[in-house]
Image 1 (cartoon, rainbow, N blue to C red):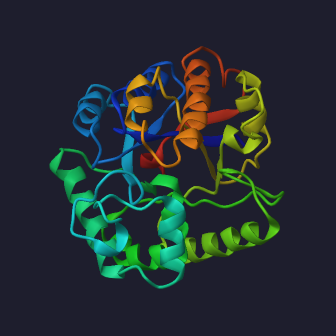
Image 2: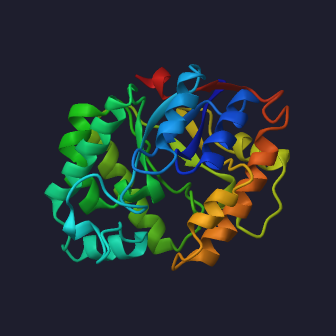
Length: 284
């Protein structure tokens, strides 16, 4: 059985360098899908790039942790009106201090913005996987069932590794339970698993073989999503985070994304592998 593989690039529209890098990786034949942020400075440019590259599937990268919201959501923002950092959002959510109506309303607004830009989303995922937090997913659930055709599910692979890197056994179990909840309650098409070279650790040297071995290691049943972040030379993004409270973490991540861009814009990564490249349109 041939493996079906979706190669999805997150953060389309975050900045010009990000969007350009994604398109270059798509044109190199390696990225089949992307997810668009609709409340960031590069959104409109990214839409133009998508329209010029019709073979690229484009979903919504639902965002609750970057920039400013499209709606009035006091339980989701800091004193300056910016979205909370992921850790703060999840802590507030776990304590029951998030208004579910605000989450649902912001999701509706981001879907409306996506539609107003002339696009129809192939699927939905979220920035920093926040939709996998059960309180946030439950708030999103009615909107997802009504308006979203397919959904990314984040689930660890059973050996203590998740899409963001090594994880504790307790967090692994929590993610497994969350994944079961999301699949059962959403009911529509999802990926069978999610993999990323970021699983290999920030200190590993990545190469063509990193992607090939990762893809070859997954079972052939179901559809695998390979999550990538091929950022081009990102001076605009570095400037964006100049005064960010987690600047060093962001800059380390950006450097790894530049490496992904260099690899994914070269040739022959999946050549000779028994895979069929597709996107979320093929699941519906």
